[in-house]
Length: 287
Image 1 (cartoon, rainbow, N blue to C red):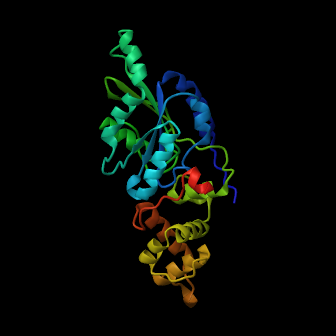
Image 2 (cartoon, one colour; image 1 turned 135 degrees about the horizontal axis):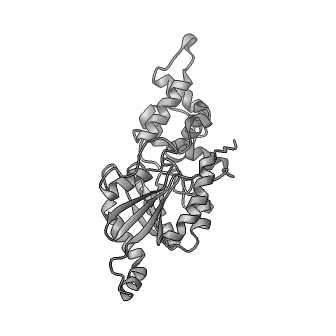
Image 3 (cartoon, one colour; image 1 turned 90 degrees about the vertical axis):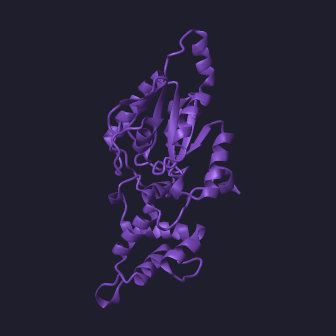
């Protein structure tokens, strides 16, 4: 299934980001720790060029802790600064400003040598829709500066937010790329709600998610839904089994798979199913 979702405002956003990158000292790229690979915009590296970059692995409270550590190590090995955060509990938030100052220590030293001690650092905050970017900025700034809503494509305009006298953040609208060459990338974005649910049939989406979890985290699925199926069970069979166990039956004893699909997606996205990371670091994908 080829998923394409590139509204006109995202083309405009890309042009705006190209212009605004000239104004900033570095970039903070926010990723979803549940899907660190799928939630990366491949256009961003091209746009950012050699700008220093801090990778924020957000929503670590919903991700697999062991895989979060492996992803952090991978990004550090690529030369990025890395910060792990959970905006709900504010975990990692206090480390943001020190991480930025460490990343840009050479620039701060040059400012000092030129007598520009009070000159603020300017950081662009970027990320795909619904990755938690606005909530992250609000936590950093300590107030509701950026509009946060659990819906893709809410932040539209350019916003400068003052963190302190020495740091300004440039909030940018969430931007996806024109199409997903790997259909699985599009599916993983849809699992987490980064693309709108009306792009893909919910039963297809939920079946795909269950199939993936059944391969990578079978104990979590059996623990939550009490299903007993073979290791190679297809996703739709899992969805039917979940619906039957929950008693989602309609006339004739048929399973209401649409209702089951909504429940599975809701429980995955809320963290009730467990803590999962669906992407492996590149070296492990190749292994």
